[in-house]
Length: 119
Image 1 (spheres, rainbow, N blue to C red):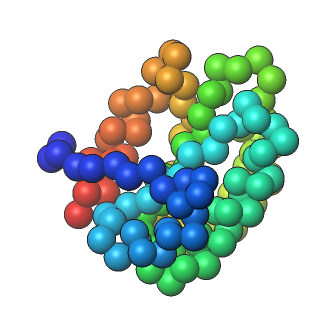
Image 2 (cartoon, rainbow, N blue to C red):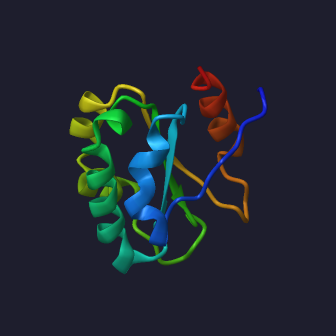
């Protein structure tokens, strides 16, 4: 895979997202599923992001992080919350992958997705 740069534009950078879309090849959106009370807010921000016309045309990888945590939003429940079937129909280059920095769960799958979407 060719070298690439990742930019973290969350938190206070959310209002600046639209300035980053033009030059990016894909969007990686992280959701901490161990922070159950914050998942809905993260989905609201994701919905706003997807309303941006430039962002809507980019491949989108949603990473569900901290899946090793004992208290978390289960994958099946997340699929219902995000209306995954409808989202996938609207965004054909969508992938949702569970991951954990502690266990390295699905790291290879994440890198493969990024490699496929570098163009």
